[in-house]
Length: 123
Image (cartoon, rainbow, N blue to C red; front, side, top):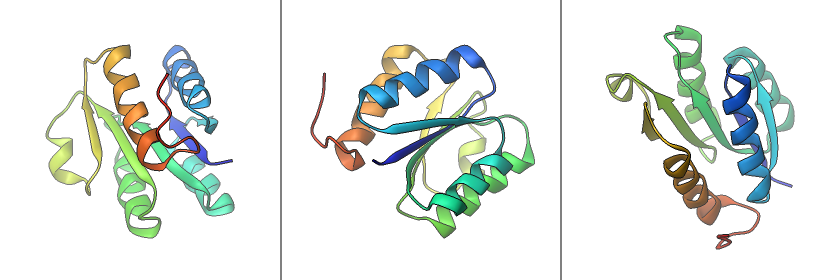
C-alpha cells in the first residue's frame, strides 16, 4: 500500500487528514516533526505524498527541501499562512491558510488521481 505522511501538530487536523488519505486508499501515518518524517521516509522509502503544515520552524523548511531533492517522486503538499514560504521552497502544492476542508479534499483527490493506489477514484 502507498504511504501518505501527515506532519501536523493539531490533533483534530491530523485526524481529518489521516482519515481523508485512508478514504482515498493510502496507508496514512501522522508524525509530529520534520525529524520523525525524515526517519520514516528514509526507513520505508515508500512515501508517495506528504502533507506538511509548515510552521515558522527552519527544520520543517529544510525537511521539505530535502524530501524534494532525495525523493523527487514524493508529492509535497504544504499548508502555510505565509505565502512568502512558497519562494523559499522547491516545487510543491501550496495551500494557503486559512483554508477549508473542501479545498483540502480537492487537493488530496487531485494527488490521489495522480499518484494514489486508486488512480481515478473520486468519491
